[in-house]
Image (cartoon, rainbow over all chains, first blue to last red; front, side, top):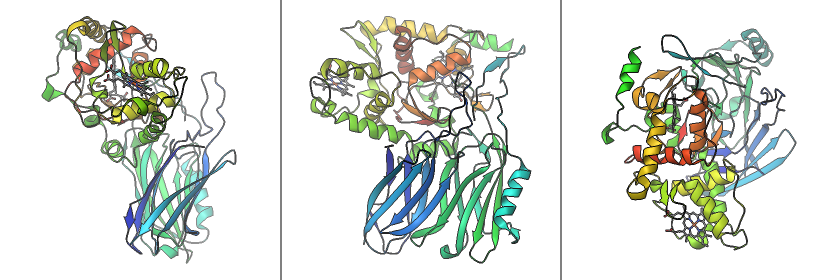
Length: 106
Length: 144
Length: 244
C-alpha cells in the first residue's frame, strides 16, 4: 500500500466540471538508474491509472518512466449526482490499489 | 536518469559543475517514428492542442505539465506526450471517459536534458493535432 | 582574487535582508509549495499525522495522548536541553519522546516515519516566525556553530558563509545560491525526488565542496543548526517547503 492524497471540492454543482488532484507516494523507479555499486536498479513504476465516477469512466492513463517520483495527477470531472470517485492504479509488480473519495452534488 | 555532479573550482575562482553522466537518449527521429505510427495516414496539424510547460526548467526531476485539447470531450480519443531527449521518450497516454469534465490532464514529468516535448491529440474523426515546447533544463548545484 | 576580499568581512544579515529560499525558487516550484493539494511533502505530513495518533511502545501512549497542541514549537528549535547540557534539534526531541516516553525504539534517521513526524510537528508552526534563542547556556554552542559556518572546508576550501552570506543571490551553475535558511525543513526537494531533513541538506552542501560531512546526530550538526536557526530568526516557518 502506498500513501495517497486525493483532493476534491467539498461540494460541486450539478453538471459543472470540477478539478481533482491526486498525489501518490511512489519512487517511480525508472529502470534507467544505477546504484552506488553500479548495479542497474530495476524498473518499478505505477504504469496504469483509471478513475471512475459511480461506475462511469472519467479517464484512464498509461504512465511511463518519465512520470516524476511521487506522481501528481490533476484532471476535471463532471457529476450529475452525488457519488464516489474511485481511483485505481497498478504497479510493475501487478499490485492493484484502489482509493475512493466521495463527492456531494448540489 | 542517474545524475551525479560535482562542483569544480577553476583557476579563476569560478565554480562550474562537471557534466552529468548521460545515459542513452531517444532521438528526434525515434520520436518522429512513434508519432507517425500513432497518427497513421492523418495529417498532423499544429493547432487545438495546448502543451503547457515552463521554458526554463529548474530541475528536470519534476516538471509541471498540462495538456489540453480544444475539442468536445467526446471527440478526443487520446492524448500522448513524447520527450525526445529522454532515454524512454513516451511519457504519457491518456484517454477520457464520459465523466471527464474537460479534455485536459496535468502531471509532473522527468526531463533528462534540454529538449523538445511534443503532445499529440487524436480525435474521433481520425484527425491529429500537436503542440511542441522547446525547453532548457538547468542543473542543481549541490547533491548527494 | 577579488572574491577573497569580499569574504574578508563577514556579513550578518539584517532582518529585512533575510530571504527565504522560497523567494529564490522558480514560480513553478513556489506554486507547488503554495498548494497543499499539490505539494508532495503532504504525503509525509499525512504519515506523520497517522503516527502522531498511534499508540505504540511499552507505554502504549500516542504523541497525541500527551500533547494537546504542538503549535509554535518547531519555530523555537533547536533549543538548549538542560539535561543533556547541549542544544538538540526538533527531530532529536521527537526521538527523545519516542524512546523515553513511549518506550519505543528510535526511528531511523532520515526515515519516512521520522521525516513525517517532524514535518507534521513543523506544519503546526507554519507561518510563524522562527524564534531561536541563543541566550544563557546556549551561547557557547551558538558560537561554535557560527565558527563552523565560517570555517573553510573540503577540497574546495569554501565556508558555508562564503556561499550563503557572500555569494547569496548569485548563480552557481544553473541555480541561484540562496541564503541557506532552515525554515522549510523537512522539505521536499526535487533533486532528491523526496522529502529530506536539514541534516541531509547540509550533508549535500558539504559533499558539494568535497568535505567529509558531519555524522548524523553529531554535536557539530546541532551547533550548526542552532546557528542557522538564529540566523533565520524572523523568517516564517514554511514546513513542508518545496525546493529545487
